[in-house]
Length: 412
Image 1: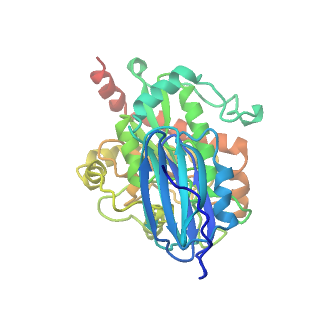
Image 2: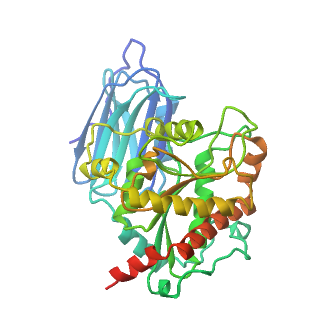
Image 3: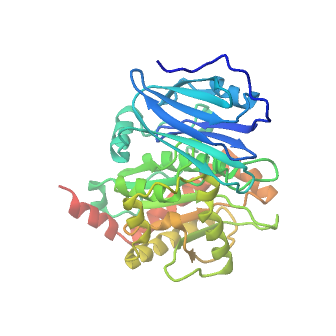
């Protein structure tokens, strides 16, 4: 029998206080984070019939932050049914996670970084990883392509949004183009913050959902949201998800900040194999590539698939296509916003390192600019941004139909 609660008295010495406890449920995985000012010694094991995870925390106080976890488990969490906790023996608090099925957990420590102290992170993955392509097909069967982005009628894309495939070659209509749409940041990684309190991760997800809805409404196109909720995905995992789904294009959405609040305008970036094309691009790539440090990656897990993806530099042709796509998207964004840079910049963005998918990163506007932050939160403006990106994709396809022709050649 698994012992959970005991009658032991609390230890007499000062215990470690949990300064924050967070949980991020998602279809991909559920993350639980305990933050403290000191590292926490821990031990985890699993129990079957029924399935449970048990985590023993040493010298941790049973304070409100920790005990609040039990009430924060969402009934829709795909993996965790409930959390129980109690003092197992002197100096040890035991957490018991009642599961909804078999899982593959990862428990690891993160050093302080940014605004975070020490973090103990539990990632609960499904026992059998989801296939993004099969998940997409299942979504097609259950969700109308024209479904609104949010429940509110006012939250739909504008009715006059260009959803046609004007300019696309006639032969394109025999094959569906899959566009991977990546909402930057998420979960433990909020991204940039605006002076009005906006988080980049929320802005990027809103725009990504609108873009996906517009893509789904376009004949012979379908959108794949790399992140469809408030949770963290490592940069390499975003690339891998797009490749596993056999995406044809990859578009990463961002809304960055700068040290000066007057910085403004939209930018579009592609990958560079030979260094950044400007100091601003170099600075931005370094900042975006630090997302894994903020979001928290388990460095003990080595995935050879991701390693091959991120180290494959035989992608000159892909970068050429990426630059062509970026140029057309930048042109369309110029119609609705000033451009921070009048040309496409390049740098070593980790999220763009797919060797076989044309990939771009779109900085929609500066969330650190108060006026641009207001516009980024406006639903109509979000739709304009999404429409401009899609129009850029259409222009790219009209000028470079080889992508469609390659798909057609591969169609059974």
